[in-house]
Length: 519
Image (cartoon, rainbow, N blue to C red):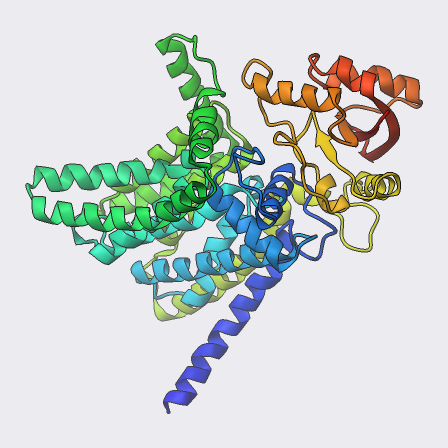
């Protein structure tokens, strides 16, 4: 009898999980369905991951500004499949499955009985996929999404009464905080007010013994991740590099520090407004979920604090890239579950409602990613020459062929752009500490530009690739004249003195690349 029940339960999971995996195959830019993931950030992380597998130490041997946990994720992906995003896709699919399971547990927490929870749990991945914030996928926020969802599960499981959270859950929350902190520390916005709330509550109630137990459990979880990070960088004599690049550079190279307090506050408020305005429908649904909770006399102040902390920490990064918003869009999952929690239906209406919601969730999962995420229109399916919006993948394989024809082991430098996939297509690793242009000006990070200049002057690399974000000139002389407008003026002299134009390629009318070869 038990075996029959187990088989029935397993069969009940097969169809919704199959729908989820098929959606992953189409909605994730790293999917084997596509020729490549064209996003510069994903390509940069994959190059960093591959470099780690070959003994490079982040921040010491090769510079980027994300966290070591993210590099480790991409290193695992690269170890599965070296020269494509297939391994990264597998990790992303596992992450989506975890989100699905956490959402299922959350539906149980809300005790929703009108709908099959296995189907309703698709809401979690749906929220992840269905806005432009997901972009091509591979952002740090995509993995932080899972940890923040776990935090929301924990607080709603105890009706937001944090004194009822077990020490085991505080341990796991500490681990998740560690994963986020060493992925990209600006994403900890939901955890800061949570642990602040816990501290104030237990100190106010004078429950000092339990408070110290919570600190110990949470700290143990956080340190379980941190010690691995410290051990890795200490073993490679790179601990100072970790501090200098991951913390000091990221904290001091962005933003303007000569502003008045009033101007900083005004800028912060403006960025908060920008975050919400970009996803006004999402924000409205979250508020409707809160209103329903208030109507049902449920506590939501803690959850509101977590959302506020998330959007403030996003704004503290001094600008808002679309994918940053994933760390607060996750709150939409809880709002939708609240809204679907309808208890005043008769039996017949319950059946109709259940079927309608199943169909609605599946339709949304299939349609919304392609309705809202415009970046997916740039993906080129394998075997095709262009995407549906006429983006091509010409430059990367074309330049790879030329580079290998010219040099047995070609070396490369990107001086006006992040990694556009040229390291992947050429199957090479960086040979210079600063190997791509980080999103910083000469005034913000002069040592990067000085490093570029030194590499150009001494011809430390065979090839330099320049991105031209406009219609490309029809001849070599015209392209030569265009280049200075797209690179920092500190680099122009040494570039033209030591490198010549070898080839030009186009992926779109305003996405052109110039391959320059050493003289």
